[in-house]
Image (cartoon, helix red, strand yellow):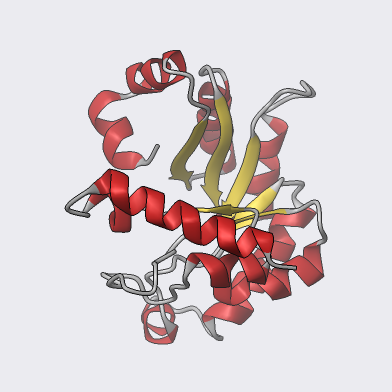
Length: 204
């Protein structure tokens, strides 16, 4: 669940989806001072069915640590994922906002900070997944957005990959949005992407 649905319907939408049997990836990308983010994470974690939630790694180690600490010691709390470099951002966009280096180098550095802060994983493009896996280990979750089937438009995304490419790079989860929601037949599009994922998973 992203910011559009949550802004329109809020916690009510979370509860409704949980009633229908879904687990929730709450993708709100919190980014603020440590105390504020800790409070937001605490409130989000108290909602039913939240399995994953996101914060921005560019908030720094103190903010990420505060977010992780807000979960307490309960074993069934959601995993916090740190968003590294948005898949819409290329080298020029990073330069415009004063960030040096390539998207790949920045994403890897931010993933290392997320692990240092104790987060459960990160959100990063497939282009950085293999390097993050090597640096952060097998148990560190990597969620890959910007996933586009081969015959799909990239839209406003800069660093995209097919489902097969993302899985082979080492992704734990894929985020597929507009190739399904903007399709003429969303159910058919979802089924086609599921087949792509299954074919990648069957290969050694």
